[in-house]
Image (tube, rainbow, N blue to C red; front, side, top):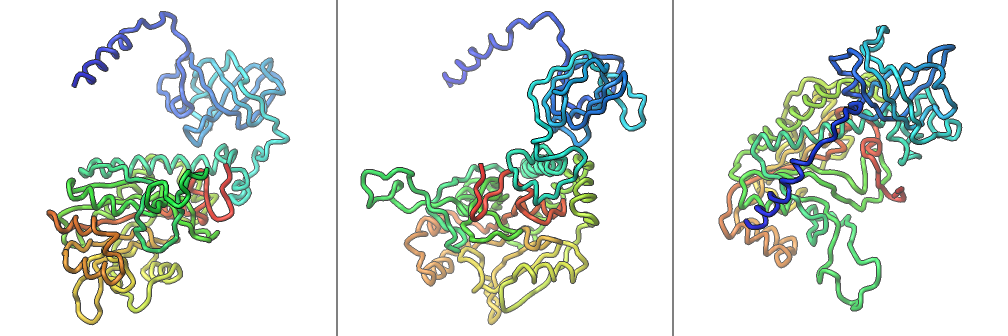
Length: 453
């Protein structure tokens, strides 16, 4: 309490500090400038990068973009401003008057009074050329520069908007955000595809682990969320996860982001599926509403013909073997290219924590996967086995009893029916934007034989 009062007193002088009397040009983002309602010659300052230059006898036209929108702001200047430094890719600061544009192509333009080149760009050496639409495969060679293109700019703005929409959905639904650890001693999936964490320099006692136990980069935050669901009825996490899969396919990354949630006092798989459906719908509607130009660019130039269809549910039962990508895509196509729930998988195919349906010879678990067009599995979820004796038996059969005593404790002390799910964030973006390769929807893709930057 003393610390909080001290901090408030310390902040007080900051809020009452005198402000300068002169009125500098208002700094606007390109997005705000394009959306400005008052265009009666207000003096503004815009900073960004030149996307195009067009010089006429008496007039110079620049298009400036700062990443805040797909559309660039047109700058109109006297030809005396023309300079070799004003080239495609150069960073500039422009001050002038924001006025109504006589052109039908844009509502406003910036009448430049001062143009300062902040950083030069050699347009001939720059790997991206003006008016040239480079394929995503080519852009992938330049992870440090590709964010400056329209395509990656649109993808990353959608990524940002989708991130905010997901957080907003959980907040509005009463979930508590939990920061689950990146370093863990658990292998949630049991797949063994783990990155082990060790000090870069040899420790003094080589035969001992740094953490006294083997430690790995997390493959999932689920088990830690289950711990928290014993104190909070609704929890979620959203962060990086890691898989040491030796694959360079279009569907796999070594580092990717997962959205995961756990809900206590849920006894029906249908209730869990409704939350999964609600998250998918809400996030997608927000993205389509707030980023229409960015989504349209992806659908028009990157994935022609891609549309977000009305969401519907169908339930299918597949039996005998696990579903592979080709099976998942077939099921989606068979049902009319709409999202499809597949429920109640054979117990033998699923991890120990999924709830046994105790349904006789079929012997299934209460699991649900959501398959979507173009991607396959997007969500994976289940009810968790909350019954102590059944969980103990499954752990014993897997030889995991000793390692998961703490997990049994969760059932021993105040256990409740609960369930949860995970959604691959990059796969979600692939679904919404129609991007074929998962490496193009993350800023810095990490995969086998590639860790650039």
